[in-house]
Length: 219
Image (cartoon, rainbow, N blue to C red; front, side):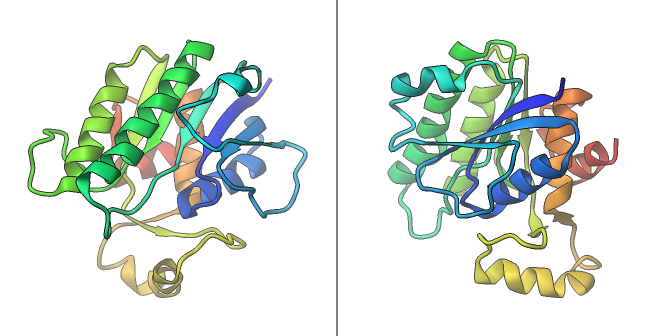
């Protein structure tokens, strides 16, 4: 049997890109999107959706969250214009609340978390967002999941057909033939494939930089 995956963040750039790969990939049998707002994409035989208002209160949907092999946690926000308290609440506290509930219901699950390039594992650096993401990564790694992988993508090229692509990434995508020679760039398909392969094949690191994501995607 193929993988059963819980996915968050499908209404954002990364989550939608990972969703596209899961739906196309023969290793995945089922995807449950856990969203705060309805995903506007096309229906698919593999796809289910569970709408929640608050990731801190999931008790009433526990039955829907049981029996999964992996969680691809792609939800999150930009730190632009957000103070440290709010950013910590969403990036750290909300992620950990969701992870704890998923672990309670699926103790043999693999947890894959979208972090970011230049995240600060020391939790002591200059940049607020990098410290908070580092704290989130470190806490997830200590949790007793079957496996935990923190993915640190940088610049990303959306998959054709994605709806949730902001103007910045539309420009990046258009310029990708040139930009790929200047700095590392990932295709969203590679991120999705790497997540799936981390569950089926494993990887020797729990923090994956761009080169690791490319390597794992090619396995």
